[in-house]
Image (cartoon, rainbow, N blue to C red):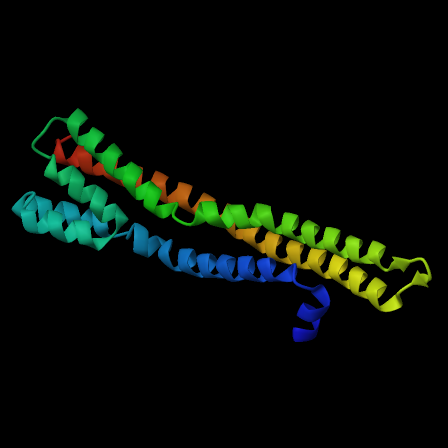
Amino acid sequence: MFAIIEAAGWPIWPLILASVVAVAIIIERAYSLRTQEVAPSNLLSETIKTYRERGATPELTASLAEDSPLGRIFSTALKNAHNSREVMKESIEESGRAVTHELDRFLTSLGTIASMAPLLGLFGTVIGMIEIFGSQTSTGTNPGQLAHGISIALYNTAFGLIVAIPAMIFYRFFRAKVESLVVDMEQQAIKLVEIVHGDRK
């Protein structure tokens, strides 16, 4: 591995840094965007049961706010349960925007790395080409410098793609996951509003 890094030259270091950041983001988002962590399947039924038994107590709203992103939306909704349906829905939309922003955290950075990695690889290729042209002297070609230039060009191009392809795959996957979670949370929040206002049993 160290031999490859040495052969790829100094342009490989920004790509290595980008790959480390990408792996860290992927691991963090994979953990944070678990469905049970964001929108527990039994939370709506438990919230409705507790609401019917005790009403929108401060204890219920506080425990929901600390539970999960969906819980924070439910907490906001129940704090406005005494208001009209429109006010309740507006409060849910505001809370939903904040939750969506939180779910999108780091995804822009991951998308930037996916777009930037091929360009860093191309930069390494350009550096390698400069090395290749630099190997041409008036007395002939320097084989060592020529080989080093070729290795810089090829290794950086390959490593740029190795970083970019998984980063783009996970970026698309996490974006789709966030959109799916947001739709699910919206539907559950609407059910809660309808139940609170007596439109649904």
